[in-house]
Image (cartoon, rainbow, N blue to C red; front, side, top):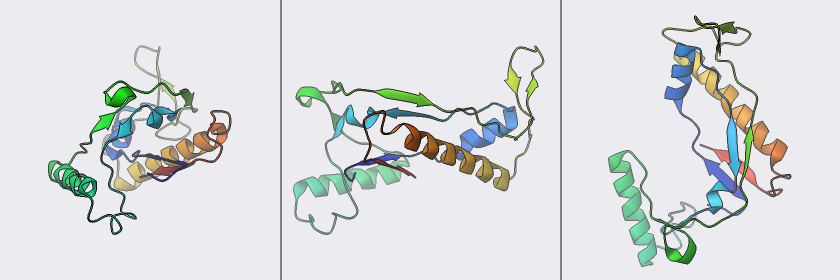
Length: 161
């Protein structure tokens, strides 16, 4: 990835739909330093792809990318200290945001009265799921911007895909 860029895959629509169906609140969270724990052995960057077509590293990276797409899941080779799967030990800072209520302005105690839940929607529409996703991504972005200086990443930006 690019220097000073934190990239995360946060667009999990199934989680949002489940939250709407069950009334469970979602807590945005981010761990600063997590991406510094391991290094990726082969990385294919679309911007660099045309410049390094002759390198073996690039060929292996493209092969892994192709396999990942066929499997519909990401595979990658990582290494840490001494080129072993032992993580580096960066300073980690976890920040937790305020809860996001799936249906705004509706909170109630569940049947037992001991857990706070929200209004449930048995069959949420795509628009409702997308609206909750937008609120989650916005909360995650605000959380990152609020704490990045204090966590030691003042020049970083967050890319949510």
